[in-house]
Length: 271
Image 1 (cartoon, helix red, strand yellow):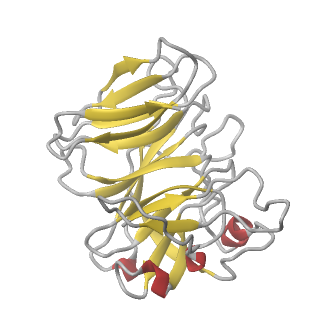
Image 2: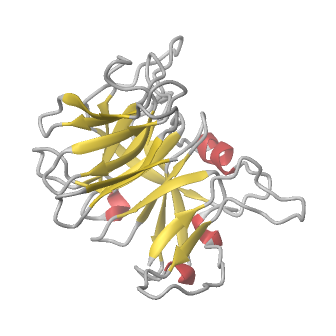
Image 3: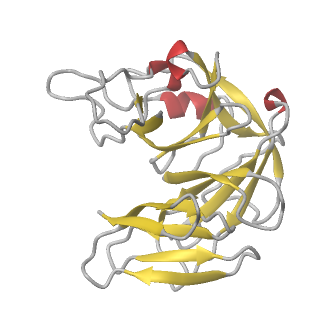
């Protein structure tokens, strides 16, 4: 199975049908029509991407809003998402008015390359008919992220630990993008650690981070989605940034980057 997400600008249609769900799609060699079964217990919101921790089956999810939250879905039966589970939102354990966006004028600054212990808050009424799931989570202490988009599971550097990585498109002092990573605890109930891994605040290095992927060899790659010239940016195992590609054809964003299993080929779309 693979998971596909709805990221609607309008959470309903003129026929009154809700949108903003996650769906399972069979990964089969023979194409077939699959009944669209929304996984409602995973929550209804402007979901951009998901990543699955293979050790636990927990699904982590991003929300593409300027005041969005990061959630995780703990399935009742790992690998069987349609059988239900519970939804939780990410929160920092330490007291304080935590805001990861680091926008100019913010009263607090979220630290870079500092691992902070987190906890997960239960989220209820996850079908959210008023599209207010994030507001309820923030009221209970969930951390705010700015347009969290691409998400990936892997280990791209020398820390030797796998983590859940995600991009925040307009986070940071110059609002050009951030990369976060979450290190899960062996016991999911105890939470893990959150780190702001990358915030270059230099448009020559990064302009509006979006989709992300990790090479089998460990390099980290970021697709840009900006109104100007879009690039694919790379990050070495040591944390240094470089430019891999530039879209000289038109102003379209790069999207959907992924490597072949042997790591020899990077596939990428121009939207």
